[in-house]
Amino acid sequence: MRYIKKQNEPIEFSNWKKKNKNANYNDLTPELKKVIKSNLLKEQYFLCCYCEKLIGIENSTIEHLQPIHHNSKKQLVFNNFLASCDTQNTCNLKRGHKKIKLTPLQKDIESKFLYYLSFIGKNPIIKIEGDEETIAILNLNDNQLSRKRGKVYFGVKETFNEEWTTGNVQKLVHSLSNPNEEGKLQEFVSSVCHVFNNSILK
Image 1 (cartoon, rainbow, N blue to C red):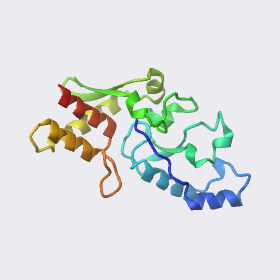
Image 2: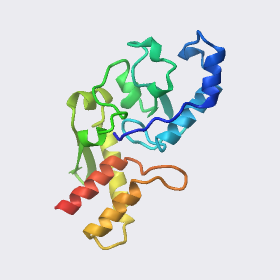
Image 3: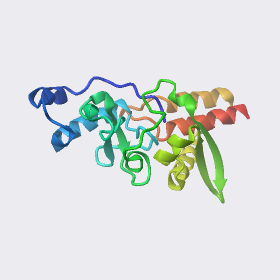
């Protein structure tokens, strides 16, 4: 999980709310939801707000950070919106209406989790440690998700053609931590960079 700096809500959404004073989230049209989701994806650099899987319009959902079930007044507040992956057993769809202690809107969120590379047989996995309740609610140590993180890490490592020095690894981490020309960040950037940084210290 990484920090997300919220941007201004899209003007189309603002105008719609002015014209529909008593509306609720279910009144949003598919077209307007697409506009909102597009803005969320850009401010998140196309990563799921929780697991950091690479997402787009078709494989993402609009997440209410404070669930409507608990706070209906927040259902049309853009600062309460995040883009989550649509994976059935992790993140938004796994969370449901449960509250979570740690969120991507906390500026120090990246310091709250640690990532560890290990293996199941020959398959690399990256597991997360931190607030156990948050990790469990979002199922961030799901086996398939852990394997994907490990696979992405080794995929990046295999394309790294420089000498394995502290300076070169730091340059790699810096590169991965910045969006590419399409405005996208490296998938699973927090875990991948954390493992690379740990490799320097060993």
